[in-house]
Image (cartoon, rainbow, N blue to C red; front, side, top):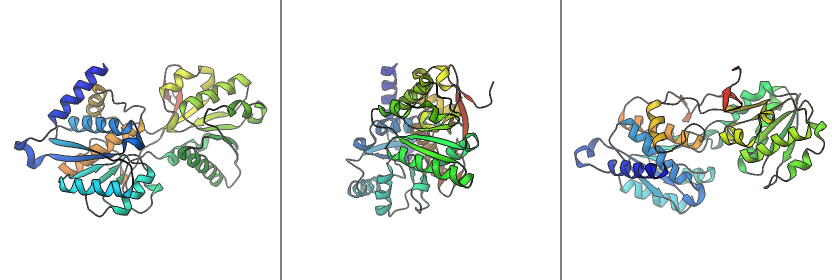
Length: 338
């Protein structure tokens, strides 16, 4: 199946190359990414953009520009080359640091879609730069009604973990005017201090366990809560744990009272099916999903056709709904489903 996917990518890439007969109406989009920084998302973002362009039935050219890094110098040189190549729009899966560097040197009106960063983390930006990351803060707010008055917040020292742990404390405290108390638990790289923290399971009785950890560590924590006999109120998490790996790494009893927030909801059949043919995950991988949303946005912007996705855009930020899910025996089901 992997070989078929690779052959399909090659075929679609060749199909998408310039054609003199349609040159004047062809959409030309650049994808800029630093493989050394974003890793596999450099290639997967290209694959998703390619499949989404194919599903649009619009004539197009997709050009990848690999950055050596996300420095101002590298970004400036690449934007100059893109301008010389007469590219009409840019898809830029950059880190937060890369986006900040981009904003310091961006001096054109070429539309840029950033699927990896939320505008809240940037503040002011030109109107031609659209932000497409999911909203973790909105997900925490959606989980708020299910939070007990006492929270145990587990996180790692990644930027995502640190930011989400602080946001959870702030949102919970402001919602009830400080009546919700919280305790932070920083998990080390190997997850070895999970056992130490749970040495006294009674400390978590009737608390909401809020987890901002990758799925493997989340699974370790959930399993150990069961093993120690902790009687927590519930276990809550955001998009980071909307992952089928959670189902395979835990037992049903480990996640019986778990709620996970998810914003990957709207799927356009033609886009989903074309991506599925190329083994692009639009169901659980949120960066793949937002890259597809961004590609569709740029297609509509450049060609004047209606967007396939119906997600709203407010103040240059794509707005995603939030659905609360329960990890059941064989997968995730919406909260309230029996």
